[in-house]
Amino acid sequence: MTTSTSDALTSDQVASMLGIKRNTLEIWRCKGKGPCFIKLGTAKQAGVIYSRSDVEAWVAGHKFTSTSAYSAKGN
Image: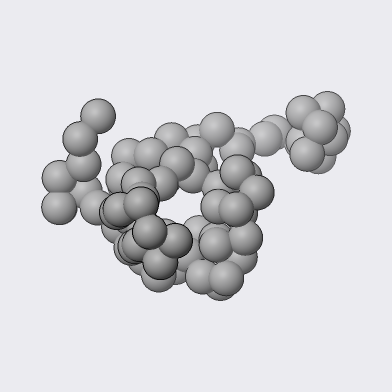
């Protein structure tokens, strides 16, 4: 899947959408817990962007109807 520039979101934008701090998003990225991301290069310092559709899909995948459903999923 390609991400157009109009679909691309920065870490700050995604953190704002999710109501979390940018640092939390970075921690999730390291632990493989957050939405899929695109690394803009191979260097450790290379930037990261997110596809709006990937973020929306990740959010949709974290919907629960009760706290017991959340616990059963092992989160």
